[in-house]
Amino acid sequence: MKSRKIKHSLFLALAAFIWGTAFVAQSVGGDACGPYTFNCIRSFLGGFILIPVIIITNKLGLSKDYSASNGGTKTLIIGGILCGICLCLGSNVQQLGLYLGASAGKAGFLTACYILLVPILGIFLKKKCGVNIWIGVLLTLVGLYLLCFDGSLSFHTADILLLACAFFFALHILVIDYFSPKTDGVKLSCIQFFVCGIISAVPMFFFDMNHSFLNISTWAATLTSLNTWIPIFYAGFLSCGVAYTLQIVGQVGMNPTVASLILSLESVFAVISGWILLGETMGPRELAGCGLIFVAIVLAQIPAKSKPNF
Image (tube, rainbow, N blue to C red; front, side):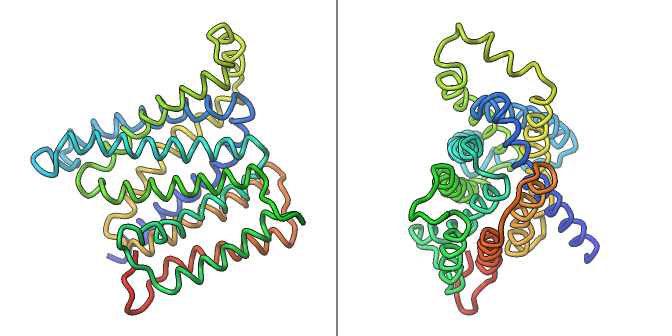
């Protein structure tokens, strides 16, 4: 039993590592081919890689059958569409923030704020949270000030976009929380990736292709370089397909609080990968901000006594 928990913890840590290092791939890939093109292609790749997983699990009898309960296929499709819309908004806003100059490390920490936003948004769903959450919110506000402000009382556009992306990802988590117990998680993920890819094609046409099919040749030229496809494949196959599957497998039998805590390491890996692979630097003030946000994230996952944990 203990070895099983260790193995599942390693699965979750590997998922966090893939997601954290994917910020580097997103930064490089978005610059090479455009933010919406990058998200569109990687979403389709993420969906395609889950198709053989679904086929294999079906043949082995490992997939969950909800056809006779909770709405069956209808619930799966509705859940997949709603998850795809939230994922599309979050990932595209995040990609745009990276495209406008946010560092991989900063993007990782600001995106990780969804872990604090989830219990706060849960209040509107009559989900109570403990005092540790509110302390975490205060620490996050201080951390954001140190991380994002450079002497003026205003956020950079990229920082605001990354905070918005954290909000959309929080909604995404709440939608998954509602639908995942009612349907198959891998199939739900597969649908959401295809929905995200289809919707992302709209801004890709208007912005990356300059709203004209006459620019297809110019747009396609950005996809001829191997340096463009390496980050796309990494984000598509590993970040979307593999990491999500690792999360599903790793969370089986795992305390959700412990699982969330391990997955929050994504932000730490984002900073480390940005430093090693992109040569990004962060001063003492920014590092202090990152430290406070990470402490807040950890604190938010600790159940408060006599308070319902969300």
